[in-house]
Image 1 (tube, one colour):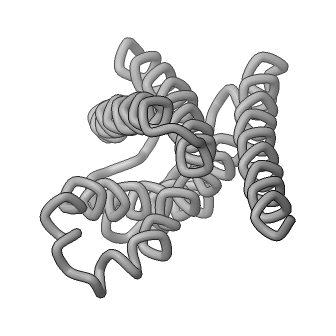
Image 2 (cartoon, helix red, strand yellow; image 1 turned 180 degrees about the horizontal axis):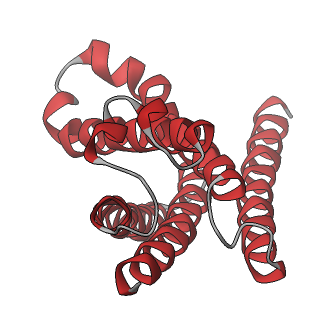
Length: 182
């Protein structure tokens, strides 16, 4: 049962750290001032890496625990899970999206020498946003605590945090455009 508690805690905390990373990513890309942008991106990356470690902990603990029928094959064929197969598909797609975003993010420094990569960076990095959104879906569909008031509150707070960050980014982008055209 200890592994099940670890899996649940790691999954919830991964969602929270990915939410922090998504919020700071939205705020950091629209921020003015190099120092502020540097610190926002630094904490954004730190939160993303912490989220990845927690995600891997979540996956290993879920697979290692016998509480539910989830085997290693679920990573390749999510429908093989005996536990909420559709929720596992959503979770595995979130996992893949976040891993792709992490790998591309880790290689970004080396790949910025390529002008073609630099132009495509944002479209590739969208995988992180897709992964975060799928993580929300996974938490609403898969978790044993998904219907509890505290888990619903965490999920709604995560949605609100990212929504507010994106709204601030879009507002600042509109303000910058208005200032430039004036």
